[in-house]
Length: 167
Image (cartoon, rainbow, N blue to C red; front, side, top):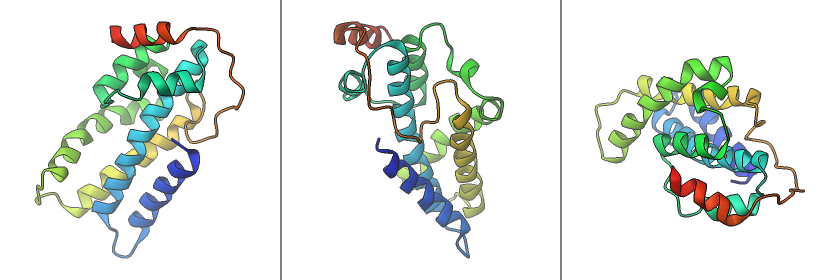
């Protein structure tokens, strides 16, 4: 979840998309890895906002398998009184349904489906990049930036684990 790693994934996605010819498979793979890392980082940001430290958040989330559906559930139990889609900036809100649909494409790629056109892969990779770029305007802050070093621990590890169990 290091911001340098996130930026490296973003750079690799952009490089694959801007090659001549574009490499759609590399672009969708790197962009999806970026989104998976950003999902976890957003949950850490939500935990920080709610009074847990980065360390507490990372420890509580380390064993969680976080797909899009689980991410939304966790976001909504961690970040009090906020729905994921309601928290999104306008551009991200429009792109979110497409991000959900990309999950099926990713599964097909991993399982070896070869009938996915390169143009389609490129389009989806661009959509993921646009979505992640639009998150700069999220109320929790830009997930690609460094987290503040100082965190006040105002809530217990147990309270975070209990919230996560409820989701």
